[in-house]
Image (cartoon, rainbow, N blue to C red; front, side, top):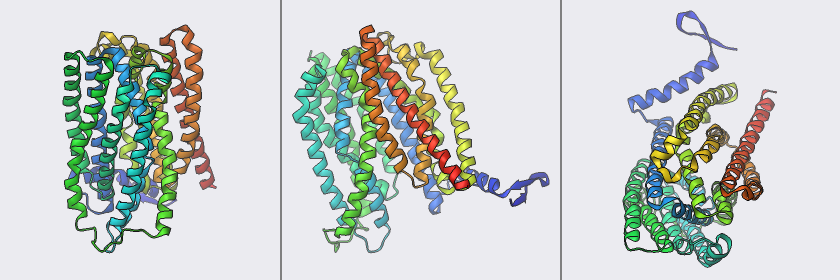
Amino acid sequence: MLFLKGKKNKKVPFKKLKEESIFKEIFVRIKKRDFSGNTGLAIKNSTYQFFTTLIAKGGSFIFTAIIARLLMPELFGYYSLALSTILIFSAVSELGLNQTLIRFVSIEFNKKKNSLKSIILYFGKIKSILILISAFVLLFSANYLANNFFQKPVFLALLAGFLYIFFVQVTEFLKSLLQASNKFLPILKREIFFQIFRMIFVPLAIVLAIGYSLNHQRILMWIIISLGLSMLIPGLFLLFDLRKEYSKKISKRNKIKLPKTQKKTINGFLISTATLFLSGAFFGNIDKIMLGKFVEGEFIGYYSASFSLISALTPFVGISSIVLLPIFSKLKGKSLKVGLKKSLKFTLILSILGFIGTILFSELVIKIVYGGGYLPSINILRILALLLFITPFLSLYQSYYISQAKPQIPAKLLIITTILNLVLNYIFITLLLPHGPIKALYGAGIATILSELFYLSSLMFIQRMILRRDDK
């Protein structure tokens, strides 16, 4: 192994020195605000993305606390059930298209002679078809889901989901175009405005609806509509930035039709990402959907309140996975192994602190954030606190696989995990339901924990097998 002289004439392994210099470069560039070159661009975009995620999670935490107090457990449970259902249908209109768009548009963006116009029109056509399909399927299945499957007053909320899907997906499409051009600052600004708008519009809609003595159905309908508008209005601001970025890049001479070979390549990539995206959407919402079938609204509210707190805490114990993604992309071999090991240690420390804090202060946090009406959520929160040990590591390993151009590994595992999660939710909820609805909530939490634990264990096992093979 090659050695270099370090401080006090000590010999330092060259690979270790190289690895430490990468970490040092990140912090020095951020301090000096030097974002030149590809490395600087990656650091700048990661920084903007980090703050966007932080604001999104922090805003969601505050927003959830506000409406949970306004709606109280039963109505908050109905809201969570309706939104989870809408999000699954919205995922059908996404199908990984935005990620595929980012990939192919970014390739063409810096070419002097590009086919940006043709590609954007092609993706826009597919997006429009998917939005219409998912929105109309939700529209026609709303009555069955609300009155037969759930037997809950969420029919009008699901109908409002028709507009919500349209508003959200149009905004996400515009956001993806900016990401493809490496413009993340407008997305950060848009996230700030969205959080402000929904904290004004949605509580105002709730207060007015309750003031006019509207029933649960209509209250939930206006919540979903105001939530969609809160996303659409700041999202339309992105059009100004898009016009600035793309007006000079798009040639008027571009043909509308793409070559069949390029369409085939795009469609193939879209199919592979669609599987991953759909599985993730189901995995994140299936527990609430299953609970909606078996327990009353107030119990769904207790579970959703606890789960929202865990989701809000997760970024604080998983920050390293976001920051270290560009670093992982540069490391190879033993340097990558050491870098991942250091990241895991750092994440473990934060996870332990988060878990202990959640266990010790769960009652106090529930009272402060949601109020006395949500006290049954305390033990659910303590059970779900185990996710603080699992989710940050999942994010870290997913970043590892993506940085090493192996996204197919987590994609296949996520499909299996989603099916496992569905089966375990049904087993544990039905098994514990005779002992009381609260016990059924414990069952949903245990099912989610076991599923994520299986996913993480599989990612770790495969990663070790790959490293052993590479060492040979």
